[in-house]
Image (cartoon, rainbow, N blue to C red):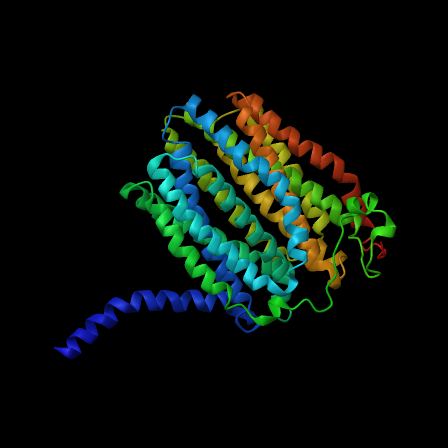
Amino acid sequence: MGGAARSVGRALHLPVTGAARGIRRVTHAHGAGESGLGKLIELHAVNGAGDVMITVALASTVFFSVPTDEARGRVALYLAITMAPFTVLAPVIGPLLDRLPHGRRAAMAAAMLARALLALLISGAVATGSLELYPAALGVLVASKAYGVVRSAVVPRLLPPLFSLVKANSRVTLAGLLATGVAAPIAAGLHRLGDPWPLYGAFVIFVGGTALSFSLPPKVDSARGEAVALLAADETRLPRTKVKRPGLRTVGPAVTHALGANAALRCLSGFLIFFLAFLLREHPLGDQSAVVSLGLVGVAAGAGNALGTAVGAWLRSRAPEIIIVTVVAAALGMALVAAVFFGAVLVTCLAAVAGFAQALAKLALDALIQRDVPELVRSSAFARSETLLQMAWVFGGAVGIVMPLNGTVGLLAGAAFVAVGWLSTLRGLIASARYGGRPRARVA
């Protein structure tokens, strides 16, 4: 009897342990396990799974549960109460975390634990319809972006030998995308049990992420040799007499041009998320229902993002300026075509191209930071660039919520975002690529 019970137990246990070993082999391959990058990849997967659980719960409460006109008002209120304060807080996140270089593991754990507790608070607000939902959602957003800023600063500390920063970021990003894809249907299934259940799932996931944060190597908390990086725009605003540290440097112009192009793509991403959510709810694609239409666009965007991440890992750091100029031009052209010949296929293609362009352009920006920013200030540059990109996404989303539900007009507005970013950075990026992109380091 005992032997039979052990055999049954092993048979039931094997699929779980086998899958766990397989995931561990993938995340720890090519030296990522020894350097600690594998742990960060796993942590980012946990982060993506928890975030999508909360997203599903909030979407069902704020967006899907009421008619379209009322939903626009509720989402506008949600943006006003959560996103507007976030645009004020976001510029503070990077500099604040720069002052805590010795506590990065604790900062990531605090971001996880904060979201775990806030998920429980939101679950009560969802059940009662309380206004606590909005400040709690703001807290989740701030904690999520704080984690993203710290994660960007941590990756350079965990690079395995002969590993480019682009390849490392590709692995981390792809792990988050895969975890999101797996967790989204689970969250939808939990939602069928009741509105709070995805939030209970998020609580469990983020508690696990809190513990996993402290499993990162101690060198994550080491700030040896680091300084604070300023963007070129900051240099023009800060008087030289106020800079105390003689080693403070500015990033190269290629980085600031690439950051502007990436901001345009983030604006497009935020715009499309909110605009298409309302547009497809009123005017679904073809003969499909609104839910199926939104699902198709979401899957296309996720597939494009994953493909862009994979291509970025393959290209490594080859000609990042040309990559950015090309993908932004592709996104602009696709947006114009989809606006003029608005239809189900072209809207789906636009979502895929936007996801592809955003992922690949961000990896190219990472390559430029690795190439042009001195190692002493590289972590700080990552933190500040991530904060600015999140602010661009917020701005695009705010515009998307107020646009009239006309496909051609809306997509032309989205194309305008990309056109401004592309035209304003085209000349600078091409010039940087022509002359090698290695400006002389300047001390502010």
